[in-house]
Image (cartoon, rainbow, N blue to C red):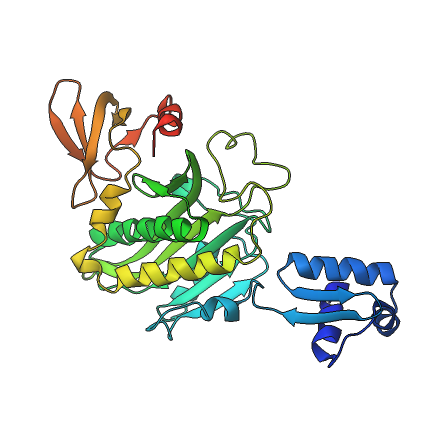
Length: 335
């Protein structure tokens, strides 16, 4: 247990203000060590008041990033949601898949403050430093055909975009299929991994991973992603941002998920399409195509008017969009 945790324990137990000198004596540390510990507690979201000749007093823990504070913000019908918040995991998706195989029920939410091997799509990594993001995975056991698992991802994208807009007051957009952008920068990646029951071609379970960059890391993003990566805040995100964001995402996602066959969220998904109206280059197999994105259809396929004038629809996994020139188009688009 570090000094900050020990100071917190004393503040919780103290019925009245307690001086830094008294805390230092109890713990066998310097008054400077107590001051640094209090500073850290404040950075973590604890409201600690201090006054001359009065000492320290714990006023509130409501802004602290703990499961109880997230649960307090969940809406009706969310009583079965279990939240497990850990300091560090390899990947929330990896750990939650292991728990799914052990028979854990739907609604288990695993959140980590840091991932050592965060996962993105197509085997890519997801940069997950401590204190900078919300790294969360949700265990689902949907009665869906395997090919319909895409709609878990699209529902999550709408939930994240809505949650980001609610928390920051700025409009988030969706880059087909599963990336959420804010002001021209990617601030969220979504990865759904599923286990298939081959007897009925349905899903045994699905693990929905969501990673949101809440605040830029102090050292900046790694060079390989610095051009595209962004965050909700550049500096000093409000201390309760991750708590509020997690609750907003969970409330919105489960609202969509419980009525997933109706796909009532698809209208919003289309409206939030970042690519609509952009000229793109994409590949299908070894062929390269150019066209203008007209929108998204009800099956979450990308509708493109080719240079020839022909209109075609492409599903996720059928084509890959060429990045060259796309980022500039996205960042210059008037959202």
